[in-house]
Amino acid sequence: MLKNEEYEGLVEGLGTDGEGIVKVEGATVFVPFCLVGERVRFKVLKAKGNIAYGKIVEILSPSVDRVTPPCPVFGRCGGCDLQHAKYAAQLEFKRQSVATALKKIGGISVEVNPCVACENEYGYRNKISLPVGVDGEGNTVVGFYARRSHRIVPVETCAIQSAWAADAISALKAYITKSGLKGYDEITGKGELRHLVVREIKGKFIFALVAAKPVKCEYLLKELEKKFGDFTLLLNINPKPANAIFGDEWRVVRGEGFFEAEENGLKFRAGANTFLKETDDVRAKLYSRILDEAPANATVIDAYSGGGMLTAMLAKKCEKAYGIEVVAEASRCADELKELNGLDKKMVNICGKVEDEIEGVIKKTQGTRVIVCDPPRKGMERSVVNAIKCAGAEKIILVSCNPATLARDLGLLLGTLKEENGTLVKSELSESDYKIISVTPFDMFPQTKWCETLAVLERKAR
Image: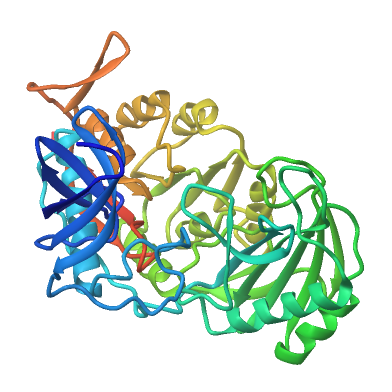
């Protein structure tokens, strides 16, 4: 198989990123934006051995699941992967992706439940992060990053964002024109404006303008007032060349810098940097399912607890809940949440690494115990898995945004994986005190390859 040559083939399956898998001339070729059963013509962009990567030239026989993407920059913007597929096909792809990862990586054969759908296929996100930069000619551009790069694809709106996104983008562009400020150039370090981050909470808006140095915001304030009613505006100063969106310095331009809201009977305060899962209705469904699995007489350990929203919900229902979170700001938010809701005696927040704190927390608990873990994409540390495995909890509830690391962690918990000389191998003689009760994907991000997965383990009867 030769680079830059064109070939034809049948799409036999989909990869973990939603790309089509085509086998031609003894090579396996990954071609984005294909669907199973389609015959396609593609151009080879990269080939090494029997693995190649291609780009669609023509769909010769389209799938019945193919639809026309509504977004004009789909395929160039790196945000969406599946707009070319009917929503039902997206849900099934995500279910199969989880099942395949569990089997191939974790050695776990289990029936994966249908993917829980989002109420809205489009317009579902409550948060937008708009990078501001420069194009090849030095002109300021606003948009989203292209796939696997920091090249900005200019946009006027975004199909998966709420309708207000177009107004936010329009206001930002007008501000750039009137102020004369320039987008930040990551190569030269020149330019002032880096990002505009917007979050909607129950019809209220938090705007955070990120700049490399202090800038005047009067023009932006005027533009936002034309389109938005109840909003607060923050200026964040981030002079560092790294990729982190926010810097350490915050200034309040308008409002208090946060809003108070209520969810599931809990009062909370949210700011621009507060972590909340971006899809309101799916987040509610996921948390509701977790709460259903935690009995009222249980003591719950919530590892990787973030800003404490789920910890507080569990504390409100159960005997007591411990949250463990390494990010100091998030842990402070959890303490604030505890005070706002009168949970001083039922909610304990611990700021530290889960691997350093979990064994000590386990020793403090007794009676009926439930352990909830919602780790970052890299999954759990081995020491955390071992501590949970030996804790004797009645239930273990895992939430994961990465099927691959979920499969690994579940395999270690269930004994279908074991470590030999620093390498994970599948074990034929798997023994565990736990069994899987359910595995359910939740479609937190329609039109993308991502999903959240909830796995519930129960201790076997002795």
